[in-house]
Length: 269
Image (cartoon, rainbow, N blue to C red; front, side, top):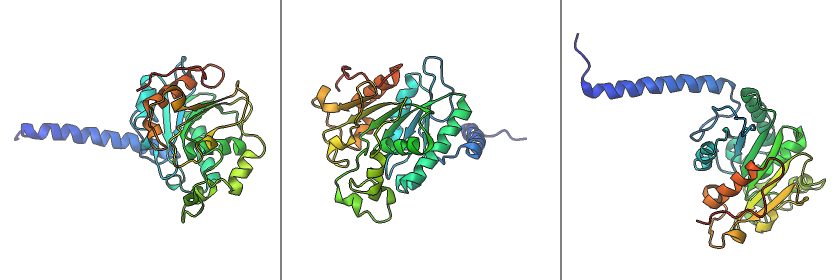
């Protein structure tokens, strides 16, 4: 019998590894309520005693979980158990329905990890939609919500109001009944700690101050990147990969009780 040529051996090894990963992926897909793709370092971990709550990453409108390709490995390196989901037809679907998808995913993560709560880090709609999730399904499964440029009070951009085929865009217009209903009975939930990280150069959530939440200083910390790092030029999209924003997320997650420390001074890039 002729032996396989040496140049074929790496190919055979790679195919075997691929086949193995497909089997693992199929098993995960059978139980995970969120379809892929997922960023590296997510959706296969158990929390540690140091960081007992899994971190769920929630992307924004027109995005997907791979938007966290920088944040996910960063948090993993810091010792966190990181999960990420895809929802709402790339975040364009009805926000109430997307909140239901987040509820299913949080329940899945808690069942997989044995944790009692999760921490949520979200961008844009992904920083606001979890508030709808907690309003509809209760806040008891969330310890911290950290929003990067979240659309908490909507946007004044007319493009959101008139976006055809994007219900979530319409719902994020500042005068939409969805935004009014979300905020009319209070902007926070008992037992949850909120950190909002925003940039003055946000051209999507306008004015940028509409990202901020009202609440006591023991429950809410609102951060403008440029207050501590004047030269930071991150915009609405860039904040997801901004090194200074990463540090604020880490600071918020590291607080045993409470939101991010407003006196924290990040290292400015």
